Image (cartoon, rainbow, N blue to C red; front, side, top):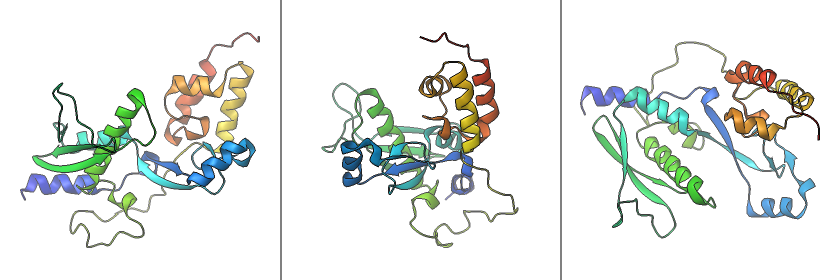
Length: 231
């Protein structure tokens, strides 16, 4: 392995800050069915901001933007391509609707697999690609600590993960409940909805999912929003 490749693996293996990590709810079929039968069986989750069964577990993951930023930092010329293509030149999906890809970083290629569950249309394609990139990047050591159940053995990536040299307090992942309520009240006074603002702001499906580092930007955007006449 050349020095440039070893350095690339070191950078890829650096743990992501908490502000770059999101929480994905993973309900069981029974939990999903229970909320479908009775909407009030669910709760507004303080972890992910979604409405779901109170006993749902959450899995940490790195979003597409944070992953792309890391790949660009390590290798501005990184690339990926599908393992197979059809006669029309487009990627070929397997019998489960998933996609196998090659991810190339600093001259190294590794396989990855992506699947989008029950998504449809264009969103399905984007989710599959994002899932495949995360899966392939993990095989380079990227965000490996989030995939591992338990504590990651120190010998897993010898000499690749640098030891922490500071005692910095991790940044919060999302804005606080008080901050979310403050934004909500301003939107309410302006006769604007949370869904409308989040669709415009594009940094969180709900106010509670806005990254902590973007609170000031969100507050400025809320205050700048035009007041709509009441219907």
